Length: 308
Image (cartoon, rainbow, N blue to C red; front, side):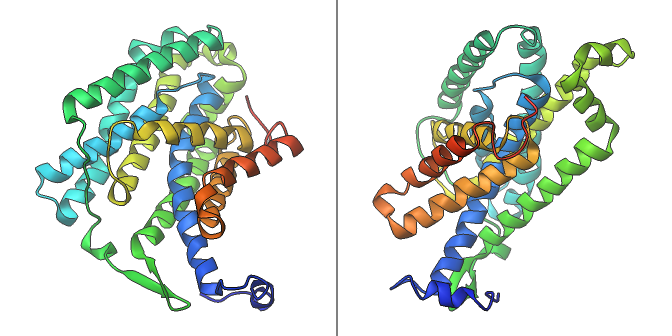
C-alpha cells in the first residue's frame, strides 16, 4: 500500500503517530464502516420504500449473530461452520423478516409514523426476550475461518486479514444493491412504489408482495451484518441497542432512504470512531456523534438527497 507523495509531509505534523498507524486505523475504521453499512442499508431500504420506522431492525442483526453461533457450533466450528453460518443465518433472519412483515407490518403501512414506531419497538422488546429464552444470557463467540487468521503488514504494522475481508464484502454488497435497485425489475418496481404506491397497484402489480420482498432483503442485510461481526465481538443479548442507534444516525446524515447516503454515512461514523480511539480514546464514542451533529447543522437534509 502506497501513500500519496504529499501525505507523509502532512503526517509529519502529527508527532508520535506514524503513517502506518494512521493507515491501519483507517483500514480498521473502514471495516467497521462496512458492518454499519450492511445494517444501515437494510434500514434505509425499508425506510425509503415501505416508509416504516423499524426499531426492530437491530434485533434482526442480533439474531443473525446468535443464529451464526448456533450453526457454527452445530457443525463443529472451523471454516465449514463459519461459511455455512454466513449462508444460512442471513436466510433464517430473512425468513423471520417475512413472518414479521406478513404478520404485522403490512397492516400499518398507511398508519401514522408514531404507531409504526410503537409497534416495531414492541417487536424489538419481544425479540430481545426471545433471544434470552433461547440462548440465555451468557457471552457467545465464534472464530473466523483459518484463511483469515493472521495479518497483512502495512508500514510494518499488522492489519488483520478479516478486516480486509469485511471491506471487500461490504463493497460487493454496495455494488449488488445498486444493481438490484437500478437494473432489475423488482428494484425498479420498488422505486416506483416508493413514489406512488397506488399507481403501482393500478398497473396490476401486487405492491404488497413487493413490499414484502423489500423487507426480506432488508432483514437479510441485517442478518448478514450480524454474522460478519460475530467473530470480532462477544455475542450477547442487547448487542442490538447501540448499533441500531448508529444505524439510524447513518440513515439521517446520509439522507433518508438514500442507499449511497447510507454508505457515505457509515464511512463517516466508522472512520471517525476509529480515529477517535487513536487520538482521544476515553472520548472515542463522542467523535462520530460530534461529526454527525456538525454535518446535520451544515446539511439538515443529509449529505445526499433524501427520498423520504
